[in-house]
Image (cartoon, rainbow, N blue to C red):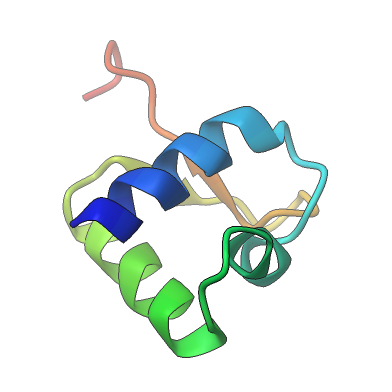
Length: 65
């Protein structure tokens, strides 16, 4: 859970500068762990897939939930 929170916080601060895997590596997560965290965040509806950006995932605003 700690890694998921770290990744989510890094994603918020990323502002579409790094892709999702590089972002995970930036906080010392391997690719498999990063993908697992992304899956968890998607299932919790905290992020959404966005194919038209560098980082393929973006934060879901609380107002939209």
